[in-house]
Image (cartoon, rainbow, N blue to C red; front, top):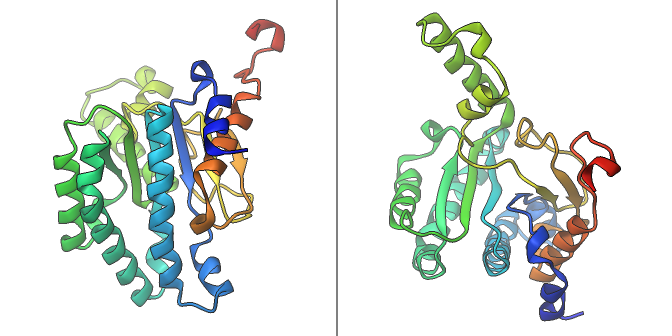
Length: 249
């Protein structure tokens, strides 16, 4: 089935508002081809472009990409440095196209650990696309869910200590609003490529009722058609949120 045919299969009424992606398999893609891991990350940028384009074309409002985890800082320094350089240069290069396609860049994660040269390029793109009203492309960079929840707990504890909130006010809404994803709806669909079946410390609070889709493909091979297939599969599922089928109907 062609891309155009698959896009026609997708119902606008059941379109996920927010899709989160774990972009796994760059290094293994390169290893299969006897290439340095960095080549896999470079090819991964092309996959980001493809998925951003199709998400925007379909009308998805939020696309969150697991770009660099807190745990990734433990990788060899050479690879970390190469990744930071690649991410920042790719964003700088893509900024004109993001503006052209009405895509707004947003960032979540511990920005204090990002090298100054990389953070400057990311912030420049964020400012340049701030006026865009189409797809929100959210890069989770230097991010992990446990880090995020700990930071939220610290924030809430400080508010309680200062008398700004009472214990009775600590609820799901307060915690959600204390996370880096405040004002962003929880993901409807989470896609993980690379053949592994785990969440890897990603948006753990936010995906409580998210539909999961696992692809055996390595991220550099992921296509627009694959993304459409994930959306079509998502739309075939019944989302009950703890209720019965009869209640939903």
